[in-house]
Image (cartoon, rainbow over all chains, first blue to last red; front, side, top):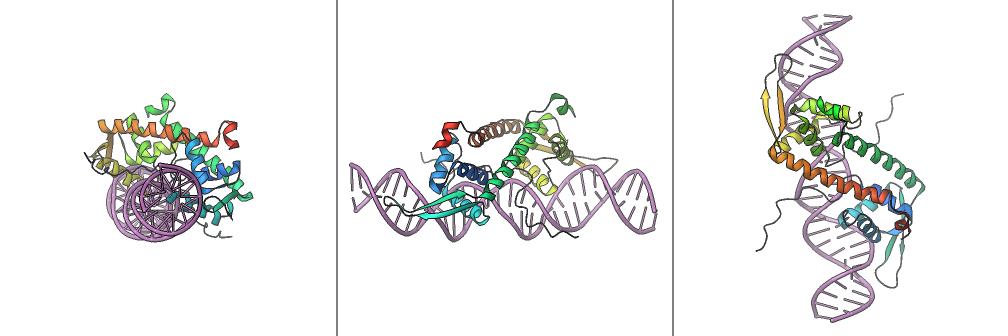
Length: 122
Length: 122
DNA sequence: TGTGGTATGTAGATAATCTACGTACAGGTA
DNA sequence: TACCTGTACGTAGATTATCTACATACCACA
């Protein structure tokens, strides 16, 4: 009973545009390496937000290029080397921007999903 | 004082993946043509969600191909012809799916943006 | 020897959005 | 007449974030 290949899963796991905000937010709690970051996002979201490596590392490099996070290698005796990321000053500003944008957009969407009654009568 | 061209506006107006849900939701209130739909979304979101035509019409055709909405042309004496869209039965089901997905993902994201204190101490 | 977990990374495909066009019609106005 | 604004539908091409699938390397354990 080999199941047919899934028709095609258009929906992405991560809401596009929110990954950067999530990374900045978790790094605001303290420095972390990428793999740990993805596990924090996974567990703290109740296993909903699965960040796979093909999204994670490009996102980290993107944020580093923009100066919002900074990184340094850290040798490790047990296990592979780590790249520890921390939030920069401009990253903290960017987190505020992205959170406020998120609040604004979700409020707008909720306003359409659950409108005051009279507004649906147009 | 001609301002330099904006560096490059990476952020999209519409949160990627939510446009389909918004269209299905508004059509759930009643049939509408595309242009009216985009204006309802704009006004009901407090001018936040700007759906431009290059997103709107491809989205409508996409949803029609999937059978979630159906359309018919309507001649109009004053002004150009209209293509009136309505929600189908499977479209109503899809709206439920997308709303529940939205609720789940936003709850997960909020759980990271505003976590219980002890969870940030990891 | 192999497997699973940790950890970082890249290449290529996918798909939704935006920018910038084009068509057409009606009404107002200079 | 000519022009502009608003309505209405549409497409072509660029951008970009994500996913899938792969690779490398180290460690512990069976």
